[in-house]
Image 1 (cartoon, rainbow, N blue to C red):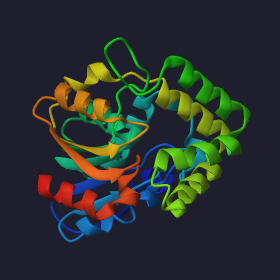
Image 2: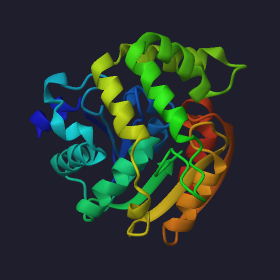
Image 3: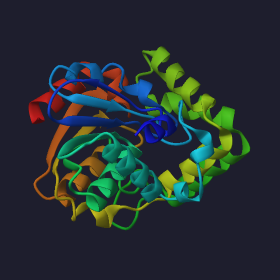
Length: 262
């Protein structure tokens, strides 16, 4: 257990018979949940961790399998098993929403509830599907990141965060992006922005909540509605929050929506 926990810088808090596992998005770490996770500690065991390659994780554990989201899903499965999770609740932000879906399909005994915050199964427009980006826009985004990691971070983080009237939020995300190893950031960006998990959605068996921000440049409303339509029996809640990180910009609204669902 300790080896798995050390590798992913995991920690358990709270009490309760069910476990909530919180997974962060691209270029971030478990600190992104600091305003949300404590609200559940009275009723649940809460597991926080860093994906391999980010935060306080063991960078030496980063490998070829992390070129696919399934590699991160396998890490989540290993961590959940080490923590003794059964019929738990997976809360995934951004790309971690798809990582959680893959993990729940591979090991259905671990999670019977999914909370997907700003999910996107595909970022690139495809026929009638509106993912939010043209293919050339994603290619340019990745080319910019390849050539100038710090410049990309400083330009993109405030855009992703939104809430320009609260520049400290954009600065926090910028700092988080800049702390990430550039080589890992570039590969994870490719893994994230070139992924297509649309076919996985119809196979979701877990009870699912989708939290969609009203104005999100990364995962627009059309994407949240697509995910909702594709996942059988899912519930879609459109938050008043704007930007892609309501766990930071609107934690109270995020907490209320999750608690109402649970």
